[in-house]
Length: 263
Ligand code: IPD
Ligand code: CA
Ligand code: CA
Image (cartoon, rainbow, N blue to C red; front, side, top):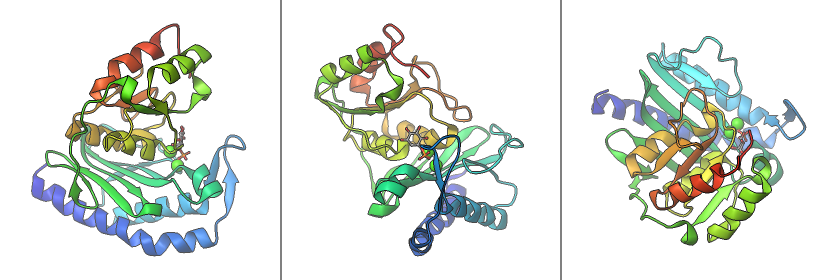
């Protein structure tokens, strides 16, 4: 897609995300929480309303663009065709409910299977991260630089330990400088994107958890693959790592030794 077309779409979407500053406080003021598959799997009116409002916005301004979203039925979506948006309306819903911090909105735009625009909006801290194909990545419109390479022994890494075995868990703690985990795939990934974390992995993310990270990784020279090192499909999700090049190989070798991770 031509740069001026992308910039036109970007202006619309950035404005839509900014207007959320007036929408989210009201939704939070009347927050209601439901569970989905189990008591840990939460959804709120904030998740549902934001996705519905974005769907209405797309229908009005970009008719024909498809939306693959966490809180809707996606059976009719053709993810590799035409114009596709992937949305996680709130990533880190448990953090929103329990802490009122450390959650974000994730949006990614693909044309014929190619990432074009990515957004991760850290609403509580009013930081809008975006990537534009061929242009770069930004935080509140300030360019982000590719992170310096960091070895695993010097890196802070991030993961939820529930799906890795005890050996891999101990080996990662021993090999890395330290472990920190936010609990929002988008925000844990942003730490890697900014060079604060060496790597973040998740053994079972869905497309909306990882959709925006592809373009940030491409623009900033980071690795984004499956945990076995193979190519990751944005429309399928599955075991994923986003990593600084300096610690990627060592992370994968620890994780893949003796079935280190379970799904
Ligand atoms: C979850 C968060 C969490 C990750 C889970 C995701 P949600 O997203 O990103 O960090 O470990 O796999 O499902 O449910 O809050 O949108
Ligand atoms: Ca999510
Ligand atoms: Ca979500």
